[in-house]
Image (tube, rainbow, N blue to C red; front, side, top):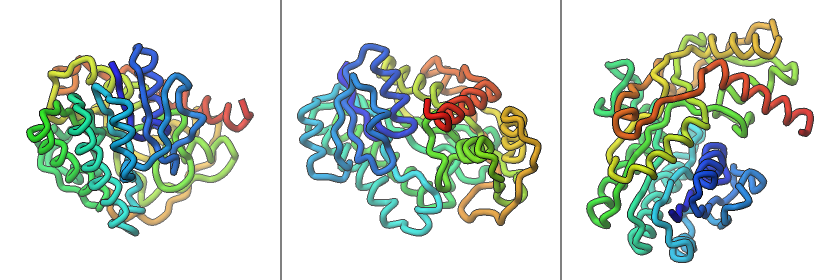
Length: 310
């Protein structure tokens, strides 16, 4: 199958491209390299260094003529969406709309969209949170991702595209950027291995559902194998973990005994987040295969190798 992956040079995208290449697909990547890295793109994939909002996007789709598109490109940092909601919406809403229109013109039939679980649902009445729970995003980022879901559903009817939205929990693993606001596991791992102190926002008892990046790539691969699966599917573990517990486990694995420092809570963050995963197993035959401790071990090993230059 010919597959185009947006954001394929990024953290989740590069792992997804690796998996799709290994599965025998012909893969093209669209990435503006603003956060992605050229060196992380599988050499078997064709890279278009373009922004999804660019007028040249249609040319990339016309050239690749993909049977399926996996849409991972996004502005994914909650604080940035608060500081610059117009930029956030331009990437996450208008960029998605431009991609959908390009798919319509190119005759693409399968569209897999990576949305957000925690930031999209917000604080919910039901935990673990199922896909039919009302979305109550508390940040412009969450709003823009849920709005783009509606466009995906709309274009399915207008263009005959078979869509599947994957609402991802908090993804972690090798290649995640340890700088900035996103990816607490990457930030902690990077700092612990450098002997630097870590800051926990608020009291640290806020919870998240952490899913390993290779398991996310597996979910995307299964979505392409099952084009009849449509709608919205949570990709998560169904396990709730506090930030304090994340720090304790990482520090123990890194051999560090220094406690974390606590800073003020961040605006726009929900208190608890854990997702129901039954639909993923039913529709995709998917369950997370990587235990949290094993995922942390692999992530620490990757960051240690990065520090050694290996």
